Length: 223
Image 1 (cartoon, rainbow, N blue to C red):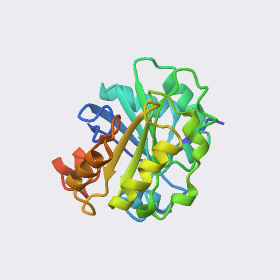
Image 2 (tube, one colour):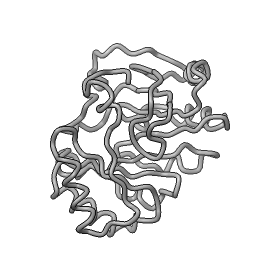
Image 3 (spheres, rainbow, N blue to C red):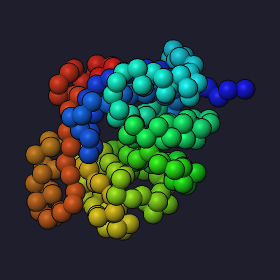
């Protein structure tokens, strides 16, 4: 039987975050998540009754190719927690015309996926206190990251920033992968994070603003 995946939406927009921010990307959003972050802006995608299109790996690949856009972001929900996701990742990784990124919440082990040839890049959250989910983090994942990967610290306070720096130092992340502070929209002034970075003399760490929430209504879907 061919494997299928529940996709709640797929669309083309700019990548609002990370190393490819500002570039076009195809977003494929999967249904369901194993966490429940307090600030989650896509809770609707995790509701049991949210409509979803059931798609095969081939159908997802075809939908991507039809857009003409070659940056691909798999998001959710939690993509890596979906059944048979390895088979989809292998299919997309085999197409060397694509640059595939997976947004993952930091609670799911990356170990089953790191040896996929031409594997996608991981954009992994580390959930801080503002999420209510820090105890769910799988810190073994840090040793599996490379220079193609990203760790995102979603921060709602300066205490979150301080904790993020503790994690960066404890696991020697600076220089291993891309690192970002990402302020919770409406909870902390990005200027305060800049001042914090200056005080800490943080090299190799970035501040990002979710561009899609600046360009469009922060609650708008499909962007």
